[in-house]
Image (cartoon, rainbow, N blue to C red; front, side, top):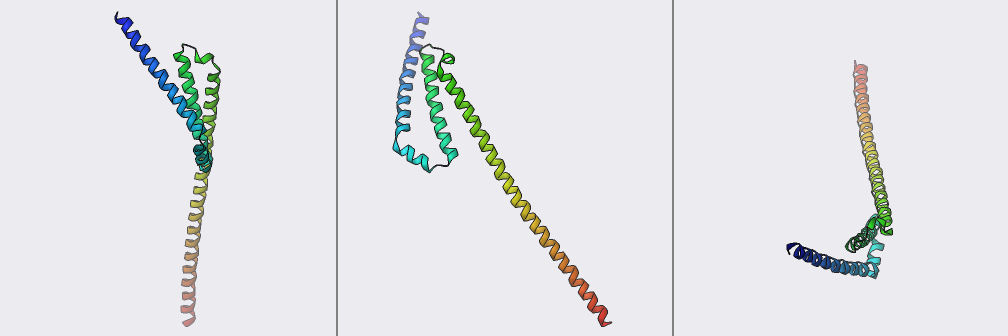
Length: 146
């Protein structure tokens, strides 16, 4: 008896999950098709826009994957698996592109800092040369007075 009750409870939980997934699906569809989202995304930097689209697609595909599991179908054999893999490749490309941009920004910052340091060194050298010249001129003028 206990097993039957546990199975019934689990089935109720799964049905509830299935209903929630359907609601989620509907809300995602509404969100993606609204003009406000399109307008907001146009104002976003390309990286953020790509992340939003990736997140939405991944959420939808994950939802479909879960629905297949609930229907006792093997999601690995369903075309959705290829889409999830394709999204993961795209995500890796996003991460790699972000790393490259960060590295480029760091290189530019380092170059600016190096240029600043070089300028400081040059100014210091110029100041040292001016001091040497001043001392030299003072020595010459002392020698000329003698």
